[in-house]
Length: 204
Image 1 (tube, rainbow, N blue to C red):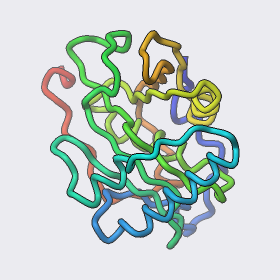
Image 2: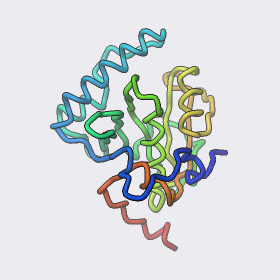
Image 3: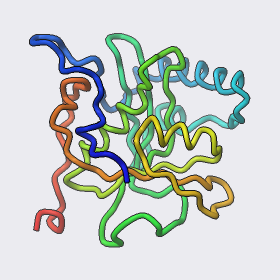
């Protein structure tokens, strides 16, 4: 089982007055060029490492260029002025599986994520952890589905997620993390986005 998110944060508590290292926010069209450069850098890194890359435009770019599709959200993670990560999330599963959860609850799916290959702090994990606590009052899990086993195992280790091989023909490696509060996460990741309201069925 994944660790409670409050135990995942390994950075020391910031000294008084020190701002959080990262800032996460919904992406806008002004972020497009920075996200495009990030995708190019990460794709080049993956090719250099021998990983397969998809020749089509990734969702994180297509959503920003054409406008985010209904139900989807593009997020960006900045360290100062440096873009460290970008991801697309929605409640629509990327694979047709029922392994995951209580059928009466929804989950958040990571449809696409790119991070800065020059960053040394695995910035994608901070996005996953922040999303896990941001949606803890309204959604049950955060999911991702990957096609490469090596990448899936690395993603599971860095993001502290369960990894389950499946029979899906396209993305056979499913990752899951239960959402949970993270009382200390705001010391490392700042955001002005209020959490979504909890559905009535989760407030009972």
